[in-house]
Image (tube, rainbow over all chains, first blue to last red; front, side):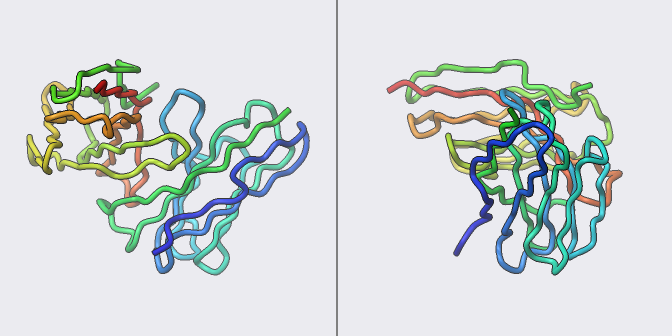
Length: 115
Length: 114
């Protein structure tokens, strides 16, 4: 079956522009997570959803970052007025039932470069 | 403040020998630990996990050891194979959180030489 997919795989944008990053979780998965990974570091939690409800957004760095999952499937992470420090790999993961110890399946990520 | 640390950024091992990857954590509320493996241009994939009520979990060539008093865990790969060459991330889950957000270490790049 299809795994987690993310688009675009690469995004280059100019400082000040808005970007939208998309995540398609594994079909039927309840939970969806967003992480950000800087070069040479591990993924860092941003936010997560159960179905369409955003359960925790404590990892979002500031109010320029937002995420939605309106129909409980595809999710979009939006960064407004991008800054160079936003450059990173953005990873999405999903898990089947939202349980605490379930395996999270990661997508290939979107590499964002802000010039 | 890094709550999960992998102090070795890289490790080189000969094929057939043991690979030992280490991870330290500071948050005493972490009660579930995982190792993920990542190949270039792919997302991390789950490898093995351990609950804090255990001190060892084994799956084929992979064994994870947990020392709670030292807040230390390690991943042993025996015997190491060239296909094991990848970046390995240690991750932890906080028992206080209702959700399942993971806190990751910085990763260790393992190179297994034929």
